[in-house]
Length: 404
Image (cartoon, rainbow, N blue to C red):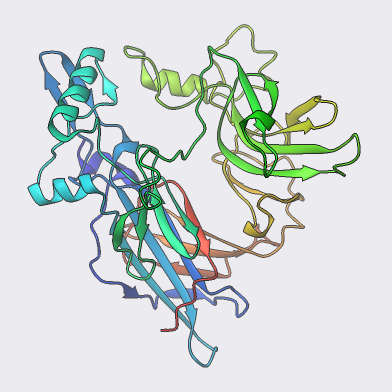
């Protein structure tokens, strides 16, 4: 697939050195937190998604297999505190396989995810024979901070430690050799088997887990989990909130099915899954904010939608100070949908920030908006020196203060 056909999925180059940004419309609020916003995403190293054809058939890369690239926006105040310094940088995550292919200046791994079954199997085996692993280490899904250090992560390998100031990859994080297996970025889903949620006491063990059977579904992204009620009373509950669909969008349709028809039917709006008997494939990928309330005393459970059912919501985010605590508000992404109430945004507190991808331009904008007045114009728009492709997850780290 060539870059011209990839729209904002097309990869970009590293800019080389961090750049001070001066093209700012509006004003960054004085009380906006200093820190760094970092977003991870797929950025194929050799310019596009690759395919391989053999005697066994064809295998192809899918977009989520692109190498990870970090995009970072640093915000800090001048020594006098009256002006803002804003810096942008981007850099590939230097996994072992990225460095191998970069040195060879050509692809080394055969695509081993999508394609004809025998071709996928042969690619898997050949990659194992040549490199000892079935596929590349992408490290393109998320970033997280732990004990003051920054890490990049994908689901097929251990995280990579990143220098938060330069975005340079420092190496793999295997907990001093204690962990050599992959870290998960998303829960797994098997619609043919049973599903259940397990709750383990904070200082418990495997035997102390309490299991609650639930209807099989797919929740890639958790909103929050917290305890609700008095632990000594009968109404003591653990609440799990997530963005839930009936079907997983990954790995996609079975071989031979029309992709466009499969996605179109899966994302078709329906009012209720329970009343969808005539067209069981419709709306299976339509994601809604959902909660499970698990009663730790009676072992009972209540569950249902947190919002209306007329629009799809995913990629949730909450105020980080409320992770694991009872919270009232969450942000999610909604695409081509209409909110159920124009007056439903009045009590959101604080300021929110997001990337705004300009598909018709060769650069992207960062919008800073007043979260109490989301319908108003952004209070500041920061022009980046280049386009930021569509990506995955990111985080804002306000305890990282750069004095520039």
